[in-house]
Length: 277
Image (tube, rainbow, N blue to C red; front, side):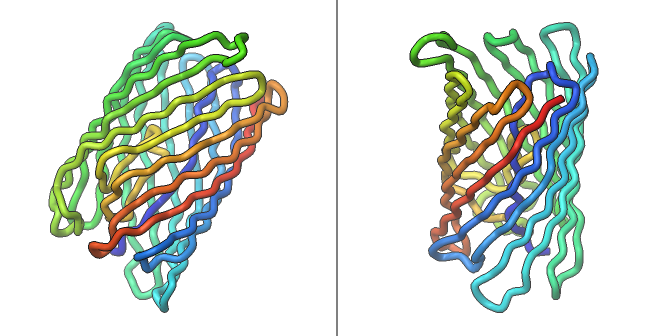
């Protein structure tokens, strides 16, 4: 099996709307010392909420082309996550991400990520939780534990608006680095993001610091099943609320990774539309 990058997008929604639907599309440009050329991704994220349950679903399609005669890579992903709210301060979740991979000349493969987590939160104040991911690939598996913490500050009605700072630490353990084709069998990686809310605008700056491989993030809706060792990434997302039920979002992320002991980069551009009702 050839291990390639799968990128999905997730927007975090409030729980006031019973149904949310978000179609999205992404273009990936690979540069420098990598055999990959372009990537095209499209999908639909949706959730359904009825207290105390919330069901999240995501389906996406990814195609990657190459600079030489390597056959195109195709991947179809289906993700399901169930959330259960306990009182007004706790949430537990469990889910699965299914990854169906096809590439001419190679056997079709199926990989998956099992998702679990618990969260404690004070609405519009702070939250703290921990997620666990168990990923299975051909003849090896990945254990990942991700504690995370976020808090709100500032005044939404001030000139600067309000802010939300979120950070998480990813502890990744690979069962067999030889089969996984990674330099190390364990990684520690940190994600950090800062969002500003002012009027209809939401602007988020984000970064991933420290090396990682086969990382899972954004609650299981983003999976790096590429196998390369990622060194860092940084990006920006901008969202505009059209009204109380819809919004437009664009984003850009630049990542550096290593392929065949060579430095390479990817630029990801994304656009999405959110509708809640």
